[in-house]
Length: 211
Image (tube, rainbow, N blue to C red; front, side, top):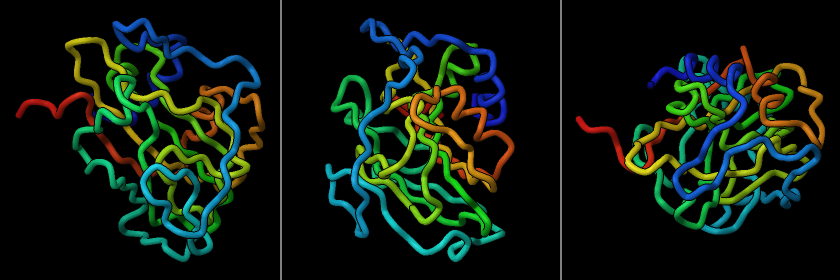
């Protein structure tokens, strides 16, 4: 399944996702469960240092033709997500960067979705972060911006044995703030991210599709 719209639509129907044969479940976190915020950085964090990359005011890097463009130093669009970021590795979120945030954006949401699981009707949200200031232009590896709200902390790719899954790393630009606070769920974050400008980086795990 390669259609982001179909994957997002399927999220509204899902409640539970079995993460793989190792018995780890991708279930909704308990109400109020969030990871502690990490301090922001004004420089590019080296590998392994968490934090947010602070850029110009929202809109100053906007390219109307390109829209929001999401990249990662860990893998190219359509490439393989390294094992380091999966449940069989260090299970840390990859560094992300983005450009083209529209002028007037009040909040950013980062949503990572297992599109393959979503197409099957399973719970498919691997990461849901709301409340990101629009001046943030990227996240360091394992980074969560100060003041952000995690509806689900990073849970790396963990497809069942023998399966290859496609994942989307989406940055959503909200014109009004979502109003989400600590205790918000992954599905609430996903709902707040619907129908707003979005940029998507896609990756596969554990391997790229044949052909």
